Image 1 (cartoon, rainbow, N blue to C red):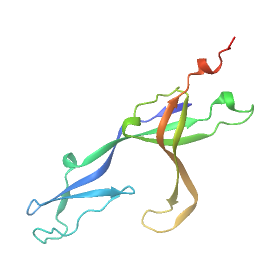
Image 2 (image 1 turned 30 degrees about the vertical axis):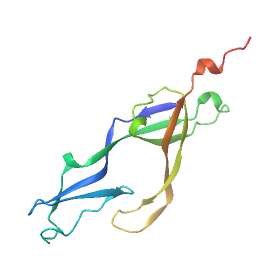
Image 3 (image 1 turned 180 degrees about the vertical axis):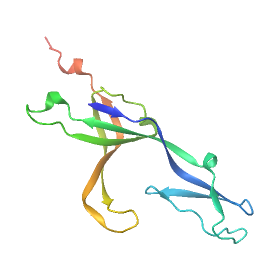
Image 4 (image 1 turned 60 degrees about the horizontal axis):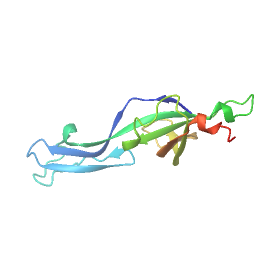
Length: 147
C-alpha cells in the first residue's frame, strides 16, 4: 500500500555547458548521479571556464514513493515492512497515498559514506527500488464471492 508520495523532483539527465569566454557549448551526460563538468574548452583552450546552463539542460521527472506491506496480509503482531521506491518519467504521479499496488522494479543497494570527502564506507547499506511498473489492485475484486 502506498503510504507517502513526494512532490515532483526534476533530475538532470544531460547537462548543457557554455564557455564563458567564447560561448562554445558542450553537452555532458549524467552517469550514476554525477555529471562531469568540462575543464578545458576545445575551442579557445581556456581552463575552468564552463558554466552550467540549466534551461538548456535535459531533466527527467522523478518521485519518491513509500510503500508498506499490506496490513491485511501480515500475521498479527508483526510490523509491516516499508520500502522506498523511485518512480521516473511516466510513472510519476501514477499512484497516490492509500492506493494498493503491486510493484515490479529493480532492487538497488547503495553504500553510505561516513564523510563525502573520504573513501570510508559504512557497514550499513541503504536500499530502494527503481519502479518499472505499478499495477493497482482493486480490493473489492479480491474479496468477491463467486456464487
